[in-house]
Length: 242
Length: 346
Image 1 (tube, each protein chain N blue to C red):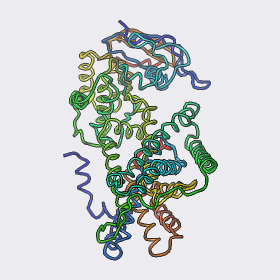
Image 2: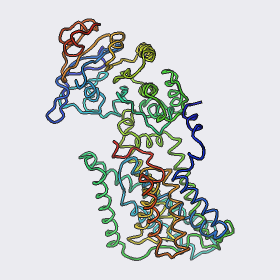
Image 3: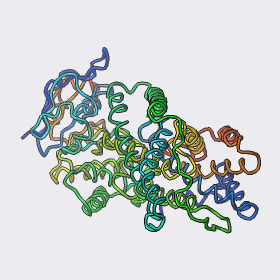
């Protein structure tokens, strides 16, 4: 069953068409990869799904209902979690408070004691390495990514949108992150990830879509996409060896 | 164990505290201690007026921090509060004049007016957001700060003149809420009214701080002031937070107006001085910084009371303003900087 169905999504900024007539489905329980060169419109597409931007045309169906144009906070409460390319924690709140906010407002089913419990659990789940009382502005890049992830998970998402979560991580951190994402998926959360780190994509993703100049140019399982001539030219470079 | 803690420890103590903010705070504290011996009445009046400016300034700072609205109609909420309290308290006062033996009414009489003012202020705030700011926000967020500045300044003019036309230019006040002999605080005789104002301010500010620090909604307000988009992505309904923020801010201003009715009777322009003072405070402390505004309120109150005592009352707005300008020359973002993400950074 498809948890997310996009059909004909188009987003224009003035004369520039950032996303053009994009259609694909994300199946429940899979890790779906969205790749493409810089400026291909990946983040814009995510913003259209998450309710941050309103598409000019096309429909988004999430979890069996039409959610086109719903505001981001509604989408979050419906079960869509998101992390950002550049993490956006609340800098003057502590790590725990950051997650508490998401647990309080992101999951309408959660009340009272359960909120604090959820927040603590999520920090443990992503194995957050520092004290929950640390101010978010004191964290380094890798820690911020984990915090962003814990915050997205605290709202109990059915679908997680990850925007370049692996960018800037060391190889060791990358392996940890891959294990973590697989564990999240195994716990029943569908993942749609935008990523540049091909190793992670090929390792994790069940299916891939490739975006170029706002249009889908290839679609399928990792091996098929990687072998696609257009993809090699557009994105990986002709001499890229997988 | 965190590295932030070790960072702090590695900075020499002297370096950490020898900066402009700490010097200013230290100087203010030193003056307070000196005056406590030399002229205790200055300390007492500073605490009383400071508490009220804190109520005004905290709300102003919060609305700027969360909604990026420079509210120049904040003084009219003060007016609304004082007139509401006057309206509610007048019949009670009449009953007391007819029958002075009603002791319980003597003690509790002023409170209904304050509570009603608080509620009316909150409703006014909710209406301001729902009727003015929300439609504007939906239409356009271009030039938001400038547009809301003009909008609130316009509201101020409309309210002042409507008040003048409908209610008139008379002073509606009370000589005293609690008509009893003054009590002694730190050896200074102080009227019960002023002592109560201090108590009300301290209790309200404490509750307000606890609300912001400890509750989910308080956390959401702080989250929105730091990153609107991030807050929305975490499931926070911005419209709810804006309504709440505006309601609380206006309720605090109305409460200030109601509690100070014996000092500031209700009349059309009564809100201007509290408005200007609250802006001095907010600019001094750093735009949008709520705890800073509370501390700043007491610093501005100290400056005002020193001016009144040592120079004359006519200079009460001049000298503090000069000091604030001097401070801003050294710390352009205010004494405590801005703890929020202002509109310019978004």
